[in-house]
Image (cartoon, rainbow, N blue to C red; front, side, top):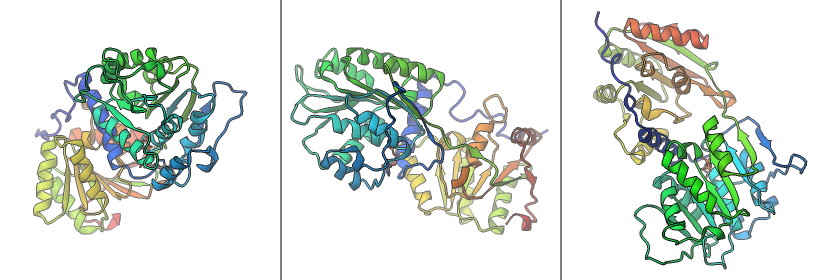
Length: 445
Ligand code: ADP
């Protein structure tokens, strides 16, 4: 029996994955999220706060004024368009700005205001009349460090006495130099060298240590070790802050080694649900038929914007080409593109410049394009063993709680294999996926 060419294909990017690839994926994903994120992520979940001293009162603030920030910083906050603290900031900011300083481990998904929070804490604790490094921030990659640096520059725009230095590979300084910048941000290897071997920084004078993206950091053993070595050089009195988007056991174990006596703040991810989604499947025999079905769907219903997921780069490229030939404005998101290029494509799509976004699984993992009303699985998501990838399925088409609009998902089935995958996905979520006849599409609109 003819087997669809996709079924046997290796999942893009997977296969013989090394630790470094995995870390790169995570770092790229995180960077992509930062580049495309222009607002706070909405959430209805409550933060969980675990205080080191459960008897001390729990402070939370509803306004930035209550924090008694330096006027230059308050001005910076407002210039960035922030009106009130985000959910995580309500609790994290008073803790981080308290006297004496408190240690903090904070976990919440990307886009919830962690970076803005620790940047504000660093800027608040700096004494600009002291010309030496006082705040140290480590990030997993050069690009992520730069992104955080940008936030420091923006928030500190009315506080020009505070200077920033990047401790990243390639930034070569003269031997024997002592840094005068009050904030240093960099990657663990270079920061460690600058503290230990090259002595550009006196670690004993650091007042605030921030470890960002802990989950990405620990994906590399080297980074994990370097971070611990940096931490051990810092004085006991140094405030330790650690942030992570996810919190598996391994992150937690690492966090406890970096941050002694921590307060802990957690904000659960909004659960995704299929409740507001109409799910259908279409039966075809080959990818050409799937393409035809896709065109029929397009002709029959008014689609604001759609995302189409393919299994391989090859299919995605082919499909994007075919759709263009039919006169559709198509954006293509593909694995070989740089993160910045991907962000630009997503941005154009967001702004409505293109109506269809064709992408591969790996590329689109973890990105949220909220206004997309139709998701088409040109290929169903399967893991590298050929089993249904339920998590990816849910993430592609699911909506988060009350914020999600109603949506439509259409799955293309082209073999016994993919029919079996579809049935297993249907069973897993216990939600009916209805058959759709693309020659008679009256029922879906
Ligand atoms: P995270 O570090 O958790 O990914 P960020 O601090 O980068 O989150 O914040 C995500 C987005 O929300 C950024 O665009 C940031 O400028 C914005 N943001 C952060 N805090 C606030 C706030 N209090 N009010 C409005 N926007 C905010």
